[in-house]
Length: 335
Image 1 (cartoon, one colour):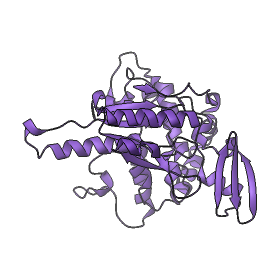
Image 2 (cartoon, rainbow, N blue to C red):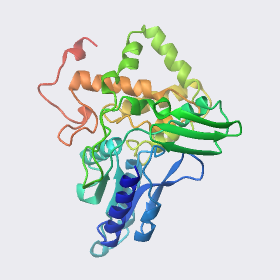
Image 3 (cartoon, helix red, strand yellow):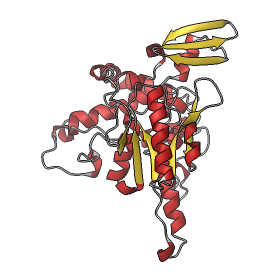
Image 4 (cartoon, helix red, strand yellow):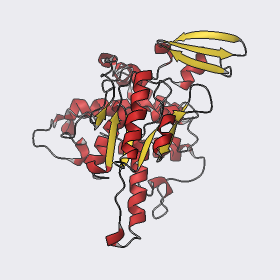
């Protein structure tokens, strides 16, 4: 990781110094142990802040879209002859590059608007799993050394196997290396365990309709509609979300559980063929809602019915945004 981090800083510094990009979006060390914070670097000298480790959680493609779209909006108020292009550099692992592929397929920006510094990924630490391992104690100090996580709390020091605290989406990831990149740093990471990617979904599918609905209502009963899942998702980029529309109003602003269910159901359907399983929504959910199980069900259906895996190739657009004469169609008549 140290060699990757060193090379990452060198490449970022060079891109900024040569003015090939206007900003680099990456991660810097957080203020708390086992945290890394998204950062925006415009000064080549500040490239030394960049880090790459098992604490880098958020999908940075979200910020690529935000920066480019905000710049385009600002340029509308500038005379055509004075308008400038903004090129964004981003540190991209597998899931982030899948989101960028989706953005490009959905015509959100051009390929020339983004420079991708590809990095291999071996998974990130799930803060909730780590908290369980240490009994909810406050982490005073911590580090990752090889395949061990060293944690210091008021009760003492503890060593935890890294795999035991990796996020669930990382454990079975089949795209842990960049799909596309302009600069690739380091060798490709070894595959995770994609053969078991849909194990939990398969068990969920075997439940009765009543049991599945009961699980959905139980999980969504935890939701406080803070919208953190929406805010962090790279595929949620509507200028006005349907939950904030007032003409017509789709969702009430009260505490009615059906409004929460409608929000989550509508968001899930918006994610059909567009979820890259980055795990950001689960990572930021303060209530621990099991969002991933439902998203992985849609992911599995997308592959089973259309042979599509979101963002896995520039030549394979989301199934609901294209038409193919050879699509499997049995499901239309026999769902």
